[in-house]
Image (spheres, protein in one colour):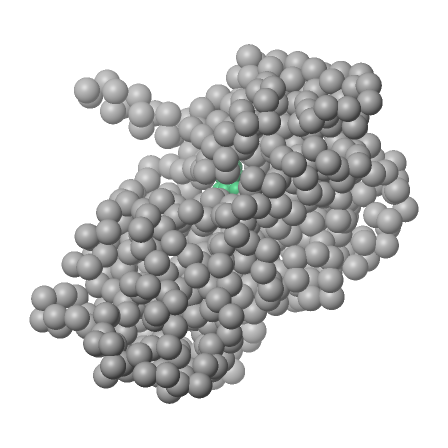
Length: 554
Ligand code: GTP
Ligand code: MG
């Protein structure tokens, strides 16, 4: 038995609520983020999961002193491929990637529980390196890779970089690159998925935890939440091959009402997470929303997590991931639009009447589908081109089949040579002049249709076509959106010499006028978590009813 202890409940509860200082890290990202060769969503998911299954997080007293001991302990089980250091609150943590899943299995098998009769003996990838007598630090040949640390100075440099850029296009690229979720941010989220998957797979061996949302669709920023969907049978919507064997499992009948069954599963998962998942605290059960979810906070990573059992969000993220792969301008444009909306206070940390980042993203897709020549294909086109079996997916009676190969459309998007700056201005012009009172937005057809309901803004949910993702947006908020878009366009078009003064281009858009104030606003918006899914805007009313009921009973 070695000196690494499994973190257990009694230990983690002493930590309190952490604030991870998750700054930007420019590191050796193991998965290429650009438009490279390895582009398929499924491949990316299995690559990242494998990497996470080969990793552990170890809390240490002093990272530099612990180096030698860790090397001694871990090298008995395999080589350490990557070593990351991060802190939250005053805790020092190391994320170690070993050379294989088997090495991690062996390492975990060698760990013990501290005070083993006083704690629940749960096995997880979150460990603690117990302080040891000094003789344990005897030198061994160092095989540990260099420690990759969080780079805390990047945010400080961001405004300077934006200010010194040569064009608005360059500013957009800088903003996109510098605020992108760090490599360690990625790894900590994947390891959390694996922790939950590992815990629940005792009951359902084929179970898969599938992350979705910005974290996997290419638009993740530092501090973003972790949205997870659970597939009990692990097929997640793919066609099931004809059974090889005439033997089938005896089975318990599911409750006839699918939603009720989902709520039952989630209740049980919430209990398991609450009682047995190390580091998971502040569990909330939001069961009455149309998409029931569990929310919790992870104490060892500082990440806010949501779990649902609806796979449509996963396929929505896959679609946005594909759009990101099709054209390199999509992501910088989405980032600039989200940042502009945050500066103009069009989006908010709390769900309500304002437009969400998700709706804004769909509007950007729509705009890029309508450029001439079109930069992005419509979902309708992609659905028509879906290859049988390879692309066939079905989630809860929703057809999520679309061509999952960006290559065909990459060639076509190149025929449009507009710069990110042209596109940003074009998007603002589109928002400032679109006939929202009569027309709806659909990325299925890339066309605006007559509105189907009387809501001020109608943005069709592309997968659940009868739903409007923006039904929460009031006329006041829509009017503000339009006015802010016109205002931003005016500012950008009438700027005199972009290289005089600091606040030019994108930096002229925030209300705050000094760089210091802009910096404060931006670091605040980086911590922002738009926890919208518990109140999916297209399903808003049921949740509002819940609140009303609560208020009335009060
Ligand atoms: P962040 O702000 O970086 O977390 O962006 P995000 O895209 O992850 O947003 P969020 O965490 O709020 O939502 C995660 C996913 O849930 C989105 O990517 C959508 O697939 C889905 N989603 C969010 N809001 C809505 C909504 O109003 N309606 C529907 N149908 N899906 C939504
Ligand atoms: Mg999210």
